[in-house]
Image (cartoon, rainbow over all chains, first blue to last red; front, side, top):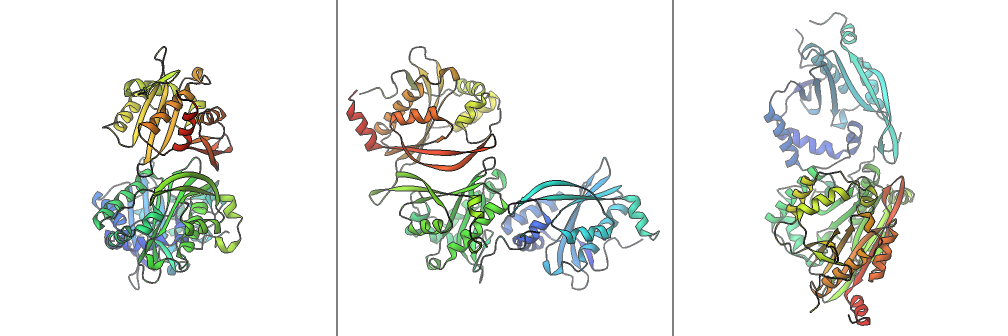
Length: 189
Length: 195
Length: 189
């Protein structure tokens, strides 16, 4: 069976709340990152409070509807980002949120590698039927990466984001199990 | 497509930062012992506070930020060494009306007069108008705070209300002024103030 | 000494949370009333919820908040309420909010009478230096009433309120102790 946790550039891990908080405080301050990744207003939260959140999450333990992961580079073992899968158990579909907090690693293929690991996990371990995601229309780099991974553009909610006095759309994408399996070309085991 | 690259929380010499629960209470406690600063910042009677009291205050603030969703609070820190030099906030936010009140102070006396207030207000206004998408912001200032009045006017604030003799200090009464700035007015200003 | 709680048409009395909360649920259903009085959208709360909130607000004798009901002198009918909030004892300034709940009681001078009573209370019993209030541009009846009682216009916060797709100003008014005393010297009742 393939190694679920290793890609070509990155591996997935679970970081300690303290380490997560330290990085999160820095990433939160990078408002370009925040505005690419999120739709809520940029914020600054103390390291202490962020650590509390992560500790609470860690305490909750395994939950079948929520799967957060931290991501480290293979060569230098640097903690660069995260992704999370939220599963609707009744319908067996998952939503993914993904981000690279360390901007030095943008545009170098790390995100695509992360997403490939994420999809592999979703389809072969969580066994869902489809994975969905949303992204900002002003994030073309992400759009290209997701298309490379097999996501298809399914629609857009018009002008639902207001920033810097301008309204932009949210794009919605999805990939189905069959589509993903076909991309693997029978090389699953 | 449009400017999301320019950092919202980074100024030239200062930045907005989180509360440092270990280091900040001691520093802010010192500010509260500076009655000149407190009388510029606060309408309530100036009162020195211990680090322990400030710590409790920070906890209450963070709780309010999380629960009430009507406050965004920032520490102002020097970029060079991340030391705490002031605080900034958008408070009393009413979302359906698109209103917020600004609060800003450079607590460390030795840091005043260096243009940090201007840098901080610039960041705060961009946050309020381009991220929170507020329609207007207000600021309440005692008439004797000439520094704040000059700073607000620099950014295009209009004096809208004069609450006559609302304050009594040092045996005489003072007016409290309310300044307002609309999102459109801020947006139409020359680039240098908005950058 | 004068009875500080009695006027020509009305008197001020204590708030009974049970009676008041029931009245609130009736009055709050009139959206013209709520838009004249409140800054932003109001939920329609149950009498029980309102009563609980009131009892909590009125726990103990507050040094800063004074709540009254307004009742007619002839029939002791509950007309509305009055809240006086001392925002600073050092500055001796308070804010006031007044409301007449039943629309058939509007425009009969009850509000003006109640306001004169409470100003006397503020200046001769609480010994305040000034009383302030905010009133909405689209509430001319209230503005005239406050002018009659002696409040001076102090400015307006532009386009503060957002209703029906238009923006409206919030007027500030205030009356100083000396001004009120001067008005009394004119009529030694």
